[in-house]
Amino acid sequence: VNPESIEAAEREVDKMREQIKAYLVEISQRKLSQREALMIPDLIHCANDAERISDLALKVCRKGDVVKGGIADPGAVSLVAGVAAQVRQFAHDTIDAMRNGKPPAFGPKSIDGGIRSAARMATLELWNDQPSRGAHTREYLALVSVFKCLGDISRHIGNIAVHVEMRAARKNE
Image 1 (tube, rainbow, N blue to C red):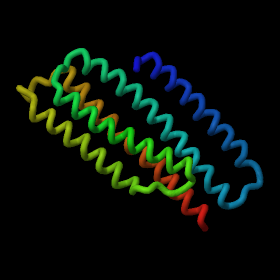
Image 2 (cartoon, rainbow, N blue to C red; image 1 turned 180 degrees about the horizontal axis):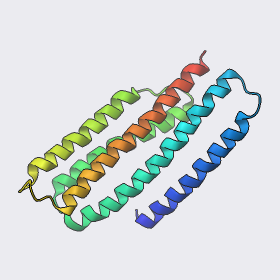
Image 3 (cartoon, one colour; image 1 turned 60 degrees about the horizontal axis):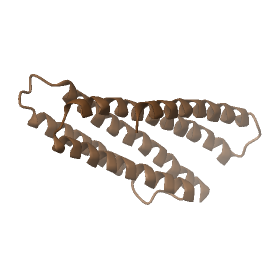
Image 4 (tube, rainbow, N blue to C red; image 1 turned 45 degrees about the vertical axis):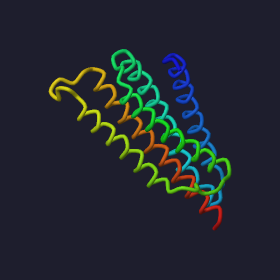
């Protein structure tokens, strides 16, 4: 994936968020049931989380270019790939729950916490592998930033998953 395509997708997500928010403000002026009225803030939060995820994805892509340019350590690449795979699976599971209109089959907060813990542990492992802890390379700092972004993406996915969970619970009321 190249940064230009990520930037274009990020701009599109920004536009979509604004369109969603405008539509939600418009329909909030109508006569809504209590359940429908409660959904509007949840949907605005989800749109904001999705937009933030796209910002972070762009940052990961840019930092990834720095990492690719300077790190050949397969261990570091493996750590990034492992955390990224967990984030990707969390996103797919959340999307599936949204499509099914059912609560997620997982505990969003515990999954998110696990992913963010894995990102912190990977950062510590990289720190311990540094030959001279006083002289951090540009690539090392980019990797730390990638792990932070992956943790933040997980948090935003977790926010969306919690809203899906709440929506499913309201549906059953």
